[in-house]
Structure formats: C-alpha cells, structure tokens
Amino acid sequence: MGFSHTVGRQRHVFADLKTLLARASPARSGDALAGVAAASEEERMAARYALADLPLARFLSEAVIPYEDDEVTRLIVDRHDPAAFSAIRSLTVGEFRDWLLADETDGDTLARVAPGITPEMAAAVSKLMRNQDLVLAARKCRVVTRFRDTLGLPGRLAVRLQPNHPTDDPRGIAAAILDGLLYGCGDAVIGINPAGDSLAAIVRLLELVDRVRERHGVPTQSCVLAHVTHTLRAIEAGAPVDLVFQSIGGTEAANASFGIDLALLAEARAAALSLGRGTVGHNVMYFETGQGSALSANAHHGVDQQTVEARTYAVARAFEPLLVNTVVGFIGPEYLYDGKQILRAGLEDHFCGKLLGVPMGCDVCYTNHAEADQDDMDVLLTLLGVAGVNFVMGVPGADDIMLNYQSTSFHDALYLRRVLGLGRAPEFEDWLARMGLVDDAGNLLPPPARQPLLLAAAELGAAE
Image (cartoon, rainbow, N blue to C red; front, top):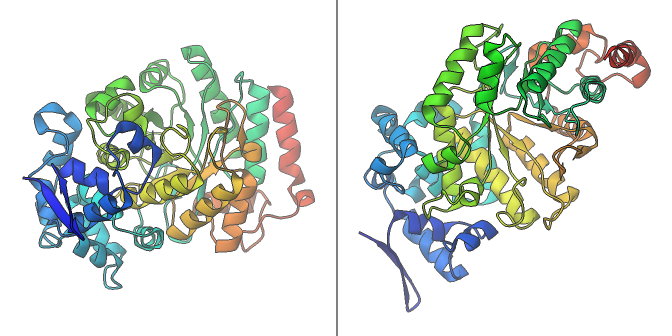
C-alpha cells in the first residue's frame, strides 16, 4: 500500500516506504544523483505531511530492503526490542518528534527506548526536524563508553588525535602526536590512517603509538585505521592492538564493497577482547561511516542516503563500539554539495546515532572541490558541541596532508572546549594535570610551562 498527500489541487503519491522517506529528505546532491530526491519543494513537503501521519509501528511491517535480501535488515529486525518499543508504539512519526522534544522526555527515558527504535524510525523523524530540533534532542542522549579512559560523559568533549603522514614517516607522526598532546588532544584515540597497507607497516605504526603512550603514561587508546583483516593479522603477529577499526555501511552490499560482513566484524571484536588491553572498560571497536558510501558502491537499493546512513548505526551498535565517527563531508560534493548540506548531514547523523544508542563523533570536514569552507565547518563544529557530540578530530593545522581533505585542528578543539566550558575524558584530564600541562580548572598552561613535554617530544623525534 502506498502513501499520498494533497497540496492544493495536486495529489502526490508515494509508491512505498522507501520512496516516501526519500522524497521527505532535505535536498542533497547524492539523492538527486541517485534519482530518488523530491522533484520539487512542494513534493518534499507533501511527503513530510504523509510521513508525519505514519504510525511508527508501520516500520515493523515494511522493510526498505527486504529481509531475505539483506543481512543488515535481518540484524535490525531480529534485534528489535518490543518491550522497549512499547513506550512509543502508539505514536505517529510526527508525534514521535513532539515526544522527543518534550521536556519530560529525558536522557534516561531515551536510553530505555533506544533498543526499540529502528534506524528507519530515527531517519524518518529526523526528516521532520529543524536543525535546532536535531541539536536539542541529541543533547539529551548520552552514550558512555570506556577502554583506557571514559568517553561521552556530560560536559566533556574528546578529540581523536589524527597524526597522518603521506609516507608514514615515524618522526613526522611522533611529532604530530606530541603536538596534539601538548594541546590537550588525544583522549578519544590516537588514530593513524596508514599510507601503506603492508602488515609490517601497520605493525610499525602500532608499536610507535604504543611506545609513545607507554613512555608518557597516557591514559588513551591507539588505533591504526587499517582494514579489519589486516588488524586481525596484526593481532596474530602479537602487535599491540587496542581498537579494531573498520568502515561500515547500512546494507549488506555496501559492507561487501568494504570487504566485510557481520561475521567478520564479530570475529575481529572477539580477537580484540581476547587481548584484555582495556583498563577501565572493554569497548574495542572503532567504526567510520558517511552519507553516500552505499550510493558510491551502487549498494543503496534505491534508499535515500540519510536512511542508509542511519541503518549503518544498527550495524555499529551490535558490536558495542568505543567510537563511531561520521566522516561527514569526506566523500565529496557529488553526495553533499555545499556547506549547508554538509552541516545538515552532520546534525542528522549525530542525532540518529545518539538516538539509537551509538557513541557518535563527527569528522567536521570537506573536500577541496566542495562548495564549502572553514567558516561552514566552524558553524557545524559549534552546533555539534552544543548537541553533545562525543568527539571530533584533531588534525595538525586542520589540513590532512595524507588524505588531502580539510578537517578540524587542535586549535579548533581548544576553541570549542573554551566557549562551551567542556572538559576532557576525566582520566586524560588527570594525566594532563600530573604532567603540568593544565591548571586546576583544566585550562592549558602557557607554552613555557609545557616545556618539559616539549623537550620530551624533541627527544622522542630524534630517537625515531
């Protein structure tokens, strides 16, 4: 059975649920490229009216990708919690929006309901929300995870220290790590995107970061963002693996394009847990996502890119990750054309992930051929900070010289923490104080006061 809504004398008809969701989406270049976007603003508003009247229970009887065709759909259906859903079962999508924004609906309530919310429900309600609604509702959601420090606590913002180098040069990477630590960054993870994918190169990077971490007693975790199969080989070789990384998608076909399936992710998680390297917790997975990845692999099944992205978070939450990161503007303007579309997508992703119980961070970023600039990223960074994002990126100078895209810098993280009064992970902040890098209020001390660690950085660089 289809859906319809009349605007004036024009009756707009939507053949099925995935068509309705696609037509209700805010405009973005990827949906236009896929041929699923609304043909006009009138059609988009008609779809939103029809979507607002749709009972949430309808999502349990109609899948956007058939159950028998897709293991992600099977994961979503098989893991749905009817008891958690009972609190919102009687609501329409429009009423669900009002319920999320109500003062009475607090973080504890949302955490109880999360297992009963499907990704398609989250995507649907986000399509009815203004940017400020996405900020307000996401701010209520707190998802706390732990490995060597505790991430996601209220009033805290973590930073992934991203010391990439185009040739994996150990001195360049070590210098970037110590630079980030001097700016109080790195509590989310010290995570390197390797330029090469040989096992020897990956193991060298893992040993480098572990050596820095152990030498200075840093209570954080490391990760080399290699394919999960390479990380499994590194574990077998005895390398110091803290977190297992993998890019993931919202369909079985998208994950196949990454060379993975759910069974492989489960194997990798078990391998990492067997190492027992966590000290305060055992969340061992790190996932990255991004709107448009399924479309770029022709693996979207005609579903709009934001709904596919929300389905990705169902994959993530099944493996209890420490970190999930939407690399929001990385794929390019073919999928998110300009700063406005990137901003909207970042807020949608953060909201949907948090609503589903996923520890969401965001790489506030854009490619050099997108119609966006750093001012656009400043706005998104600030809004995500207000919305309670778990972590953001810290890249030297905001310019990743290995991946060739623009992100956020150590200084940007310092700005956000200052203007919003946000602390770091508590264990990491205690370490900064012991190292003499921050005052009693957690503020960075002037550079001369940080001289001892600066000298240690120079010594380590020379040793490498």
